Length: 83
Image (cartoon, rainbow, N blue to C red; front, side, top):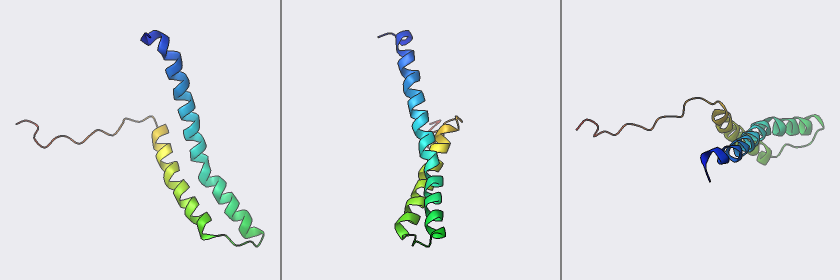
């Protein structure tokens, strides 16, 4: 397969990856809404809900960084450079 013929597939995969990251970035807000609903209806908010929310925040932060389209973090330079 040539590069020219492979570009549409590559772009399709990139769009699917981006859509998945956007969905992940929405998860903390969904969990927060659930916890607020439980509080307003007098239900107990289990510790597992709070732990899940914190985990979603961590993963959403990583997804946001991936979506930022910034320069990738450069690998640290070797300490023996210039020898």
